[in-house]
Image (cartoon, rainbow, N blue to C red; front, side, top):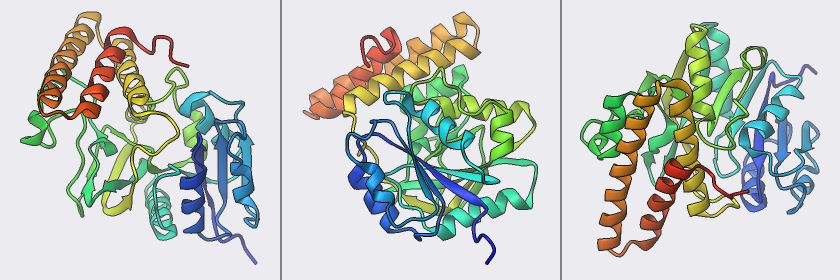
Length: 297
């Protein structure tokens, strides 16, 4: 019998056993899956692959961040295509096949992603544009709510198929050889903005990036093993790093100032409404923008 799959699903786990178990239970046992464990076996995720003959477990050594762990999964894969997923996403095998078929049908497409949805709506971070002063201004002050495609993050309407400058890896397919040839995820990013940096690589290589709003994938966002404020600080640190790496110093500085101002306004608004968790998250984002990861592990 010929191999029914020419792609492998690559998942990075960090204290994600419960979510990973639910995801694997929803997918065929024969589907090739690589689980890269960033918690070094702390929650026993290797046990979840029992009875899945084409699945494999890799211990990253712990604390490597998303980019390094995901690259490890791709480098050790033997499949023509890989699909990146999150333990807290719920794609069907039909969605995974459709993404790979899109790549197979057009060599000019470098990546193809489904749209993560939460509570029936496309998530903001599923894809977007290269940051510019205008786009950062729109995003920082909430104008993207009036102009959905004018900010940094630009989700499609559900059912809409669009091209973007970069795509989220929540459910994204690539050709393995192309991904490795371009250097994979930029490992200078611990987590966040590696997707924006890879989108830049694809654009420079003349490849298109397709975002399939007609392929909604439920995403239980915010359910990793790390705390919410911790992740928001990392998010801000990654954005600051990206802006200064790819833009002139004065432009990056203005962009950071706009984001800091906009998110401090959000902190105040949430505090006035006694939404303390959101206020804390936005404050952590500002701290990341200003001071980087700091002492975070």
